[in-house]
Length: 370
Image 1 (cartoon, one colour):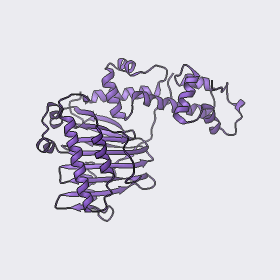
Image 2 (cartoon, helix red, strand yellow):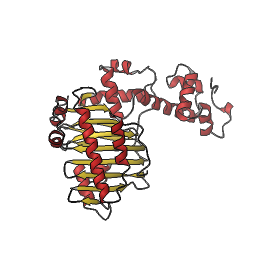
Image 3 (cartoon, rainbow, N blue to C red):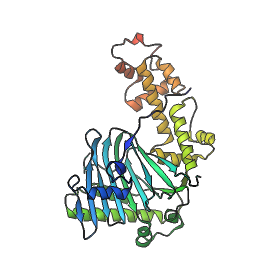
Image 4 (cartoon, one colour):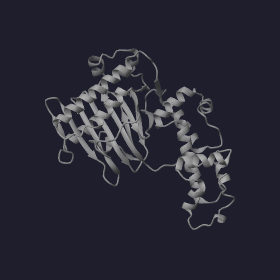
């Protein structure tokens, strides 16, 4: 039985369009910030070629800030430390740089597109880093990808490094890294790595810098260099672990998986079953889905099942037993436990909160939790 339609309002822009010069590029953001010192007071070290500026979110958009930092024209960094109220997105295209992404908190959804005519195939300080993932990628010149960020709280770090620096200064010349220097047409090479405690300490050190004066620019430069060195260590181990090449066809498959998970609760969509139905293998499906949508297949499906169940409870037309079956649960007790774990309240309590004036007998069917 199909579930709740996956309809979403048009998303607002992220920082490339929001704060940039209209080109929709990373460098365009830095040009725009540099041209508006009255609106975004910068920290600048012309001797070392360092620049930093902070952009606070307006109250109607959320809370927190973005921090932008550049080291000459070799390294660019964008720090997201905010809570946003609306879904946001932006298109990203190749600017000749290798991208290093660290997701510390919050889900991020990504999608890929091929250009027409190509070959398809919050506080500054005091927030501890609990866990993080590192993803390195390079967008092929004939492709773009779209970042989709649902409402929520985020701590994200994006570092953009020229291939020349990685090759000449960091000594990266493995076959794995060569994919980033020369991405094949119509594909986006991507590598995900588990990060060490040294990574976590370096990330926390960057987050703890208050950016109060010029010495903080030097500290930030040192931390960014340390993080990139750790990335080089992780990528030069000769292993292909976590390496994938994603094409436009792959993204279409992941998007189809997302739609199925969000709208059809009648089937048991484990990663293996879903991969078989989509004609791929579970390893690729799980890796791609987690990267594109910032969560596992299980967690994504659970969220939509719970949201759908909550809507049905608020409408009050079905009994809890009927709702549990509609949401894909064979046993009402399993549904009750999952709902309580997800929302922190029992289904009957959620129904009563949504309809405070209704007596228990007014709801159709029995609302027993067992």
